[in-house]
Length: 108
Image (cartoon, rainbow, N blue to C red; front, side, top):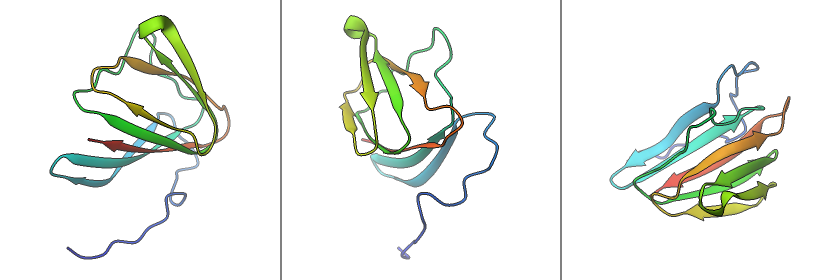
């Protein structure tokens, strides 16, 4: 494998009509991706229900995730991270408008 070098904050388009999902590494049972939100939220009535665990850290911006069980709302600021177990239904309820919220997600 050849070493790969990049910057997590680089090459973000100025206009983001939709949330941006970019794979950084995807092999075997791990998928690491950069997610960039700019006022984006999960569509009404939609819930993420993933088959694997997801560890996510907020690197920049602010966000609120809503978990279906108990309708628990979790606010996140840079440095906050969560481990979301498989089949834990959740959605992005809010991200900071007019500012890039940058996430690093590790799907296991």
